[in-house]
Image (cartoon, rainbow over all chains, first blue to last red; front, side):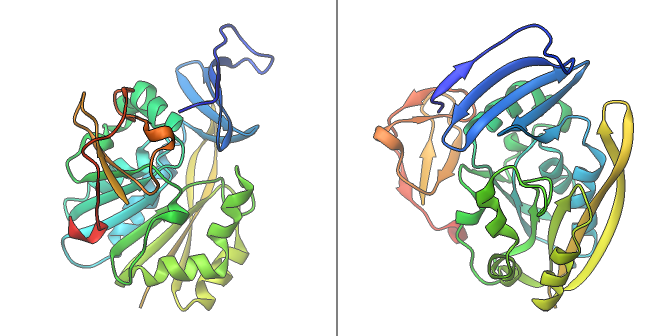
Length: 232
Length: 46
């Protein structure tokens, strides 16, 4: 799974305790702890934390709220802590949840440290784990009711340069085409992303931009931006 | 696409490419194994 593993104990200069640091095919991943919270750093960039709960859950809840019908199929790009996946499963209309996670070590950390916080979404019989880049998940027209992207801190704050392609017009249009009519493509961003909204609108979707309050540090609240693009 | 079943914990997961060196590590229990019950699947079939 990993090419190199380094485990440290004791505080680092930031006051965080490094639990594990690994180098994999996708880069350097670090799990660290601050108080009762965990944070994941990818390639030196803050990626996610156990205190980033409200906006991750809102991504699923608000996207699904606007989708009609039953027997919904949802694709989540980026497992992260697992909050988005769990929030999707809490909608009883969700029949199947596909979770694409490129990095096995994130799955391992999820199981060891996060699953208990978010409700163990990978154990739900409706869930199927794709151990792959969400970019590589085969998409067919009308195969999902919601596609929820939370792979980065947003299109302007990537953790992997390769993820820039996820926010380009070709791939976003592909995600929209994978939706059934009325389906929603949702993207999470830590900062305003007006170009993303423009790209989604140009692709023919109705775009809502929603600001959600969330913790951006263990003791500090801030704002996350959700871009919800509904296919006609 | 390959559906891989862990022989230890029976967790099923999908992988788009064949495992490197024929081995995979179960993302649930960490068991390293050579899949024998893998099959090409269509995600629409489930």
